[in-house]
Length: 288
Image (cartoon, rainbow, N blue to C red; front, side, top):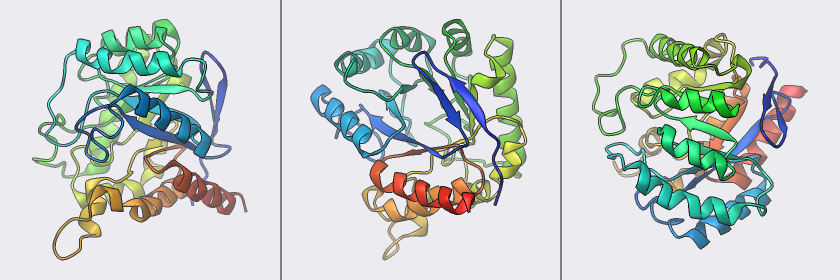
C-alpha cells in the first residue's frame, strides 16, 4: 500500500487538499456520442440536473466534456464545443458549489470557459494537441490535468501499443509536465493522469493500476479515470460479448479501490455515489 504525498491545489474559489482523502471527480458528458452515456445529458436542462445530482451524491469536482474522446471518435470545432458547453456553465453558475473542471484540448475553448466559471483544465492530449492550453492555464493561474494518450482518439486502440507501458507513460507525462512548466504553469498546479484506456492494451491498463507508485515518483498528484472503460467490459465478458458500459459499475469499483491503495489522489467516475463510498472505505483502510 503506497503512502501518497499530500499537495495543495489552488483554485480561484478555494484550495483543495490532495492526499488527505481521495477526491471524487464526477463525469458529465454533454455530447451525443460518448461511449458510456452518449446523448443522455446532451440537453442543457438534463445536464444541469445531472451536475446537481452528482454534487448531492458526494462529488468533490465536476468534470464537464463537450467533445467525445471515445475510441474511434473524430474531433469537433471549437465553436461547436463552446455552443454545447457555455449554456450549461451559465445555468450552473451560482447553483453548483463544487469546482468545475473542463475536459478540453483547445486553448480557445478553455479561455472562454474559465471566464464562465471553470476552475480546472483537463487535457487528454497532454498538450500535444494544443500547447497553448498551458499558456491559458498559466495566465489564469488554474490547475491543469495532463493525461497520457498514445495516438489520438481515432487511432489509439489500433496500436501498436508500447512495449514497456510504464516507461512509455512515465516519459510522456514527464514531457507534458515540462511543456507546462516552460509555459509558466507552477509545479503545484499540475496533476498527472496515466490515461487508462487511451492507447493501451487491456493488460497494460491493469499493469498501470498496479504500478501507480512508480508514476508517483514524478512528484505530482495522480488522477485515475478507469470508470466503465472497455478493458473492464472485456474482463467481465458474458457469452463471449463484452459487458455493456452501463453494467461495469462493480468492475469500476475494483479499479477505484486499487487506484486509491496504490496512490491516486483523485478518481474520475460516472457512478459518483457508489464510488464515493468505495473511496471513503478504502481511505479508512489506508488510515488504519
